[in-house]
Length: 305
Length: 154
Ligand SMILES: [Zn+2]
Image (tube, rainbow over all chains, first blue to last red; front, side, top):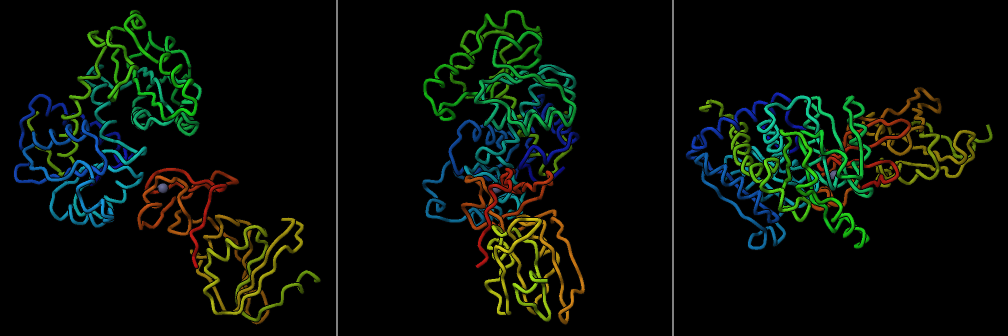
């Protein structure tokens, strides 16, 4: 197990499986205050309420105390303090740091100046590894396995860091992929080359109706307006990549729909009550997964299963 | 023989030959030659069968560590290194691309931490022949040769 979790590449297949197993233990018994007397720093250099609440709930459930800030306006950072100085100070106060920062590579750098473990809660468009682990946990929980699944990734496959990380992490488990996206948001060549080199099959389509019936997982992502130079093109794409109940009437019974949230209109409200909708439970799984990640990095292993 | 005479010979030191002319100033920058107090002669836009136009640098009484000189492989990999003693070439060296590059090069990702705070850049080199690509240790993005910017050494 590495000391920090900065990028999903920091975890081996074995690290991933052990973390997911521990997350299951926490889901079965969420009140295991192994971190009583410990202090967890939650430092958010840009606001992300959803991620911060999930992490802080996880740390609280483990019995830790939390220090930190949720944006930089009221801190000395807005007066120009360097990241290095902030991390040096915070790592003297705490046993573990959870950090979100708008600059890419900031988390790697923080882990190199910190004396305590650092968890990357998002460094700009680069990495958000705890999201990937909670996605894997959700897949494992709903499918009963990770091996040999067919995964359809939909929406912004060009800039979406969550799909890139998930695709790479799933590559340990013999998947096959469908990539559904508009032309301007296709999966970048470097990631397709990665799959080809590993011998993992994938197909690409622009048609959302195509890859639904044989999928085990449909992973929806947000198509963001700021990715488009042409606003008319955005409006067109936004309406095409919207999943509704009638579209999934012939899908496999085990199929689950995931979405990192928040959604705009990629998934129509009429899907929410279907047995295939899993995005709200997925968010809840984030707490157990993050409890497991924090515990693993602090080398706590003797939990009640 | 005539070509040899265009740039005066040195007694002891290092000669860098077959530098592509358009890379000369970057090579000077990477090696920090503007800070040297030794005698240095440059030849620029010399005819070359291999390169069209080449440049040459002769640095008196200076020898480079392999790690230092190999950094120019990033921009001028075909450069030939000749070690001179008493007007004779006593050793010829070829460049090899180092596996990591610390400093020297700017990360091309504008959102990279190294472009905003006092963090020294660090890359691993990926040989994607004939090109060299740099993988940023921090932001994990690729800087390719077309976007390679040298952090000035002066
Ligand atoms: Zn970078």
